Image 1 (cartoon, rainbow over the protein chains, first blue to last red):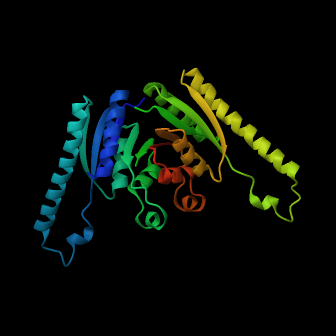
Image 2: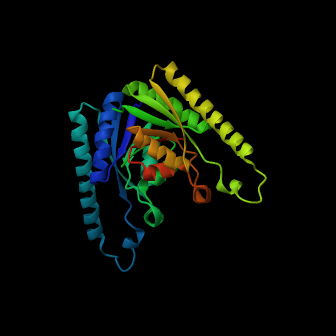
Length: 147
Length: 147
């Protein structure tokens, strides 16, 4: 049914549930998994006055983010391999997470995106929005949403 | 992976595409499918003063709505049987389609809701909204969204 599942993760407990389900579904379908972590681009203002000259701090920030991302993905990879599911990790920088996810799914020819949602309602939904919402709006690939 | 998939339909072309995918997934998982159509009640104002709608007309309206609903769900049932997937049909009156879908998924103990989205964006999204959006917000069961 599915051949290549994209599982975006931000390392939160909510997405762990989605990950377990994703691996089970991949196993059943004989699909491979791409684990995906988006790094948001460093805000341009950090390169401008009055931060100028803090390149070192920014580089340090970048480095730690990369480490955290790799750690989350490595956990996903371990779980996938335990189940004998082929796994590829991707850590990428994008302007916003949803853009990164939609683009990665297209570029890598995924046939399913599996992710979790905080499922905010009412005003919180309007104010905070949700990455998952935007992925559903923009993605040409089916999206499976876990709570 | 999944044991019981709820597939709501409104008979639209996007829904038909989701139906095909849903049945393929059910077959792979060894799940059964419940096809669902939510019938909206006749708007209250038709019962009010100033309308010529008599009881007979309202009864006729409801009758035709139900027969259209049964027709759409029966089409789903045919597809399921062709694929050898166990199938149940449910046609229910609900105040709004999304409430009908969410409560049906819970009552029937489904472990997945599979549905299509028209994928409106921008203003159209704010104005018209989407049944799928609301199902994702309200459902405790995972939702797989097709375009």
